[in-house]
Length: 253
View 1 (tube, rainbow, N blue to C red):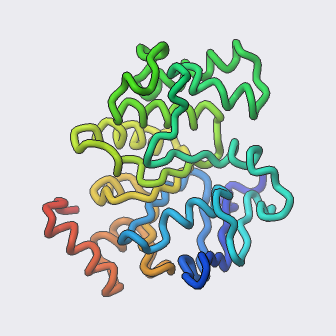
View 2 (cartoon, rainbow, N blue to C red):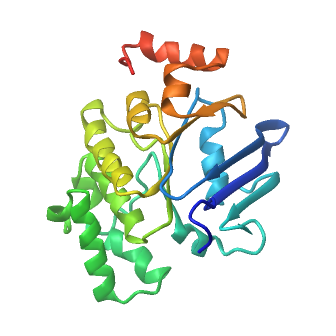
């Protein structure tokens, strides 16, 4: 490992085009150990595409992504890299034919080549952490959305990633389930897990983020601490975007 103050992940001059549509234009940002970076912005601003590029689910059109200084776009095996940079999706992506426990074991066994006993013990440890240990024999269909998302988080944590990416992890949930998932994420932030979170939950971003990145039309329009970006935005577009949340009763920050 390098110096403590070296970034784990660096995105440099990242561009992504779909046909003639340029979704990301010249994105640069660094993520340091224990950072909680919340990416905010309107739908279509490129937030999810950025995460999908970081996780190699999309191939950038141009630019580099460095993980501990190595360009992951050159010859990295995506499955090995994704074990270190995990992802939690909007739609849970659990295996419906497997129990909760098996869902959390399968990656450790297949990708990390851990034996069954280790995988089971580790899966249980993280299911406990997210408050889902009593559901180990349930299938995803028997769980609420909030419970499924907590299992998905446990599954990602069981790989013991260095960074966890969250792509709007609460946007598919009923309002009464959002809190239980954000609570788990708050705990992870307090534990010092490095996280990059695309979210519409402004109060959460304000309370938990070490850095907020506001994306607008494929560029980073503004970034800084929650106090700087959410309380005192300098950019007109950021102000406009945040005023919509205030107007929708999104609370004060």
